[in-house]
Length: 144
Image: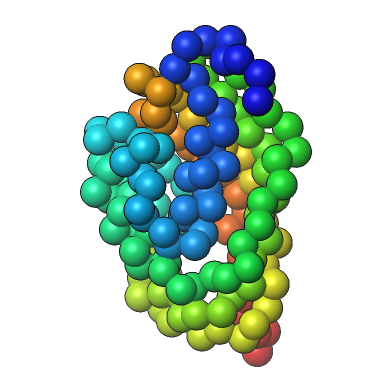
């Protein structure tokens, strides 16, 4: 990776965050986020590093064979924007925010999206992640 244009801005952390979120692995979150991180995505909000850890732990073992492709990445000041595509196998129970159970069927989920992240001290301090929530529903729920 080339030298950062702005010291402390590490766009590679966006990919690390997304992979942690999909795999449910919260072990490296302290190196990715500030303690007071704030964030949003179509499934909920984050108000702290502890919120991020709790969210990841709820997803542990939900997805396997997780991979990610970065389609574009741009940095402006202390902000990075990453367009990405995640692929994962739905291999474990998924509980929605309203406690609906989605049992695994071994389907491969493909999810394109965009994350905008702000950095402070070499870690993500705020983020907004955009993706089509209905796309996930259509891929994981058997039509009636």
